[in-house]
Image 1 (cartoon, rainbow, N blue to C red):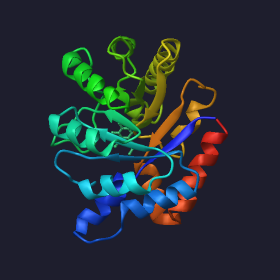
Image 2 (tube, protein in one colour):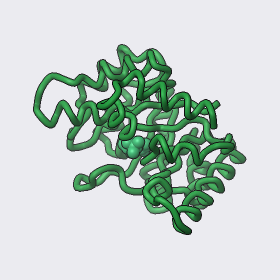
Image 3 (cartoon, rainbow, N blue to C red):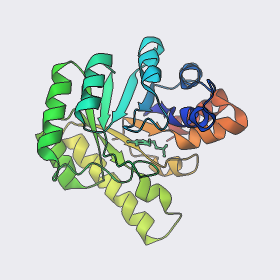
Image 4 (spheres, rainbow, N blue to C red):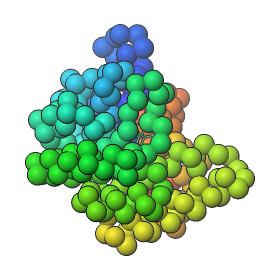
Length: 239
Ligand code: PXP
């Protein structure tokens, strides 16, 4: 059964919207774990728009499952990761003006920089994943630069409601997952997955873990974090 890593960024977004001390993403992480999350994800962005340094350090102390730090490939973030020592770092592209991570990291263009980051983080005992588009050439580079895992960008597929673009996007994900698995890379998937689109992944057993944030936090606003995580967990168990 695939795992579920719950991204708590948007609990922090809500807190930052009013500059209050609540809601606390650390509290949300603990509830998510009690509801069955297999890992907690936080994206420490360069502009600190949601998750703060304090959150990452507290999460490191209290998370009982696995702490997954998403971050851009910058000297500042690599320094923080080497200090905090999350269980897994997922390297992502980052542009200040984007609403969320838009597209995967281009390993062909940024190969040297990413390769050096992978080496630094791995030598500190941190498992490293790279967030990439479902593209076989990107998967091959991830393997060549010795990343431990890939996270396949599912956003293009999830954003399309129906039609040939959706079908093509899903076929690309299936192909990328199979190639990555053959190369013995760990395979995670994430971005844009909701309570409906998760069902499309039934039978795609190459995926080790789903990384899901926005839809879970949105549902949590309606039914509570515990119920929101349990529901997603049950959907993944049924895939
Ligand atoms: N994976 C990566 C690399 C991301 O950047 C994000 C968004 O922070 C997610 C997964 C989760 O995406 P969503 O919030 O759409 O579930």
